[in-house]
Length: 272
Picture 1 (cartoon, rainbow, N blue to C red):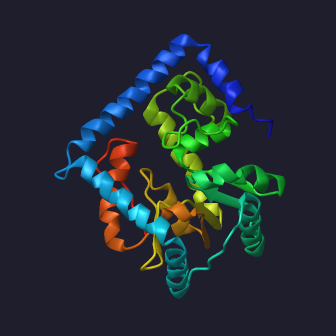
Picture 2: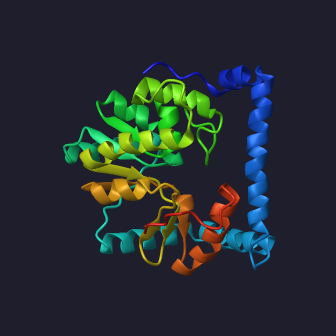
């Protein structure tokens, strides 16, 4: 894999194209407008709900050690194996050791910002592991050998015509065809084989519930579900900040999450 340019270099290159910057700004503002409209569809007061979420997180921070150990004990009782990592390097070594123990050299992965921060894909590639990102936006930037440009919409800087050419090169779609339905179906067929043939799946974690030892992964594409349900081994990577105290707290965060991210009332999939 070729060296990926750093963010300042990419930003400078991107900002030099003023028409593209204008198009990108309009796209992001459209998403923001959807978010603001979705916030006002709630029966509760939006700011009061945000304040409630902040209070829950403040409580977690004040009692972090207790909630983490409670989560661990409950997760172990549920049959999970819990690993603790002090830093990115240790996190990556742990993931690699799980893959090696499973005898796996290939893995499917759904969106995880933690693994992006840890540069897990590069580390695994250096150790002979083939990783396929299965979130559509993540797969697009992976094929383009780029990092995500946005925490929710990783390829929002790509136009459909450019994705069409990228898919023509890598997936064999007709040259010059930028029809979103055709491109999405091509990605679906391409990824279906990966789901069926890889025995390890990795996901991020949106929420980890201390009182039950369960965690929640929210997606709009079902790729996390496909990966986990078809794989023999599920690796879930999470930071401490994902802890919430009780299952009933999910009611607060799930009403905020999708509205703030994509302007939806709720994501399409919420597997536990």
